Length: 341
Image 1 (tube, one colour):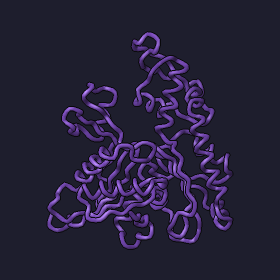
Image 2: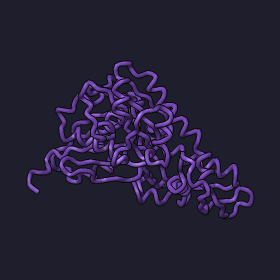
Image 3: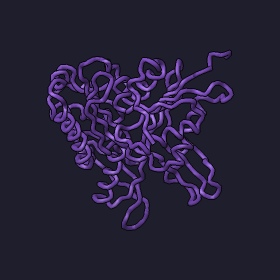
Image 4: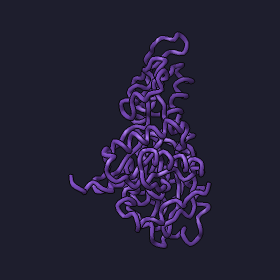
């Protein structure tokens, strides 16, 4: 191995649903659900990532599964720190070598307190230097946009907890809007709908399966149905029902409209000089939510501009942060300025 491993800098996309880690010169080395399982008796972390996600809804009372990030912000600081430390140590196992520089992508709406918390967690995990980058900026870089030019580009990043809409130009975010609607909200809407219409209580993993299988904003194939299992709210016993594509579309309509509204609001605030660029360049759609069937068409109709879904929507944020790690000094302008205490 020699000295090749020295200074293996790391980029982290600390997402509500998944955390991805990119190591310099190696690419993406880790993509795990942002979930931890903790034993309440001992306070020890029992599992992180996929193993912890498998435990959701299946644990005895003394074991709790947590998602440290909710709606794109850190809901449980201690759990987030432990999770981040675990993932960074997995990516950089040999702590006797030089400590890595770490770039962490955070939602554009994060407060200075939350930003400090993320930095502390990365320092705790053994970083020698920590820089933060806003997710829409990282997504724009990861999507291959040339953010340094004077032309405007618009990015819509629909993640697990938030939808980030930003217009970027000259290496900075000109206008941005962050709404706390993402994949999780769509799952919750499905859970609420099934509870109301079928008196059935679903687990969050079942809701996610329904979204991935039947989720759509378009009107095609409305008669497609799948069986769903949950607990009957009347008898308390397990029960099976069926749900159709049309029902799922109705269930998530409000959340989809919120995303469309956020895009329109951001466009309304766009400086006139950049508005012409956006008509030429269109809107780049990224994040897991961009895979929702019919969403690109729905946005295209609403704003009358071309919509481009990136090739790897789930990876664009971490790839953008990774590019900052590969070209640390050249990309320095993309980082968030230091927050004053």
